[in-house]
Image (cartoon, rainbow, N blue to C red; front, side, top):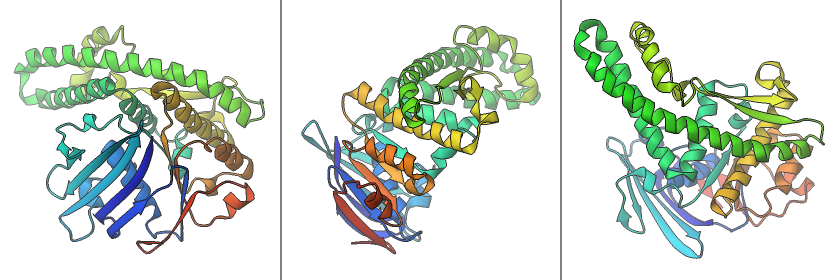
Amino acid sequence: MIVESIELEKFRNYKSLKLRFDSGTNIFYGDNAQGKTNILESVYLCGTTKSHKGSKDREIIQFQEDESHLRMRVRRNESPIEIDMHLKRNKPKGIAINGVPIRKASELFGIANFVFFSPEDLNIIKDGPSVRRHFIDMELCQLHKVYLHHLSNYNKVVNQRNKLLKEYSFRTDIMDTLDIWDIQMAEYGKKVIEERRAFIRQLNDIIVLIHKNLTGNKEHLQITYEENVSAEAFADTLSRNREKDLRMKMSMTGPHRDDICFLVDGVDIRRFGSQGQQRTAALSLKLSEIELVKQEIGDTPILLLDDVLSELDSSRQKYLLDGIHDIQTFITCTGLDDFVQNRFHINKVFHVVEGQVY
């Protein structure tokens, strides 16, 4: 699968922009704060409906404008697909695929698969649990639409249940309603846990070899899924912990409190690893994500590298660049020296200057 072109109107610092991409490596270079990352963000947004930064639609629309328009053309299995997206300041976004409006964002997932790699991703191991959960969720949502269905329903139930728990102090008649939410929470939560378990198992099978190669066979990396509660015991634990939840006015049990742990030779590197070990494990994780997508969909994902090379030493740069030669890649950087040094083949170069692309 490849992204052939994108058109932007009133998006971030671009009044109007039309770009055609190569099926190989596309480099966007220029000084900082010129708009390079915005191009990668627009591609990711068209494919997933979400900004990799977590930005809201109104923050993406150009200043003093009410709406923004994006159009991306993708080719998958020789079939052309056009994705149109209208972002509105005070209304939900509108999306159409080949001119046909879609009602749910989930209909967009699976058309193209993206792996986004930014300098922030190198901190995934030392950041908080929510960052690691977000990584799992975004990958699973792209690969399995049914997971998106289970997760979104689970999150809705948790929000409704938390709302009820907050009202309990002045509404003691809510116990029956709470029972209903507990049944649904356990039902959807169990499915989320089981799908995350399977994902971590698959990831582990891939990451071991990648990390060994990256560290010259010196380190063994393993990822463990730290379940807040097991799928099998979720319903019982939820019932047992109700008094505590009423006291805390929030749901204290469930996969919304899960985490993953990275062990190098049995040692938790979040707590005891060096920054170098953490960054190498984060790079292994991203390369494993690419390989997992290949295995799952039988095609290569589209790789978006946002100024990552400047954060890696020369050996890790070379390993990363060697591993992506067969994937359509979008790379932002401030200069082309790293690619020349690594003798990396560049298919198309764009120079970005103050919202203009040459």
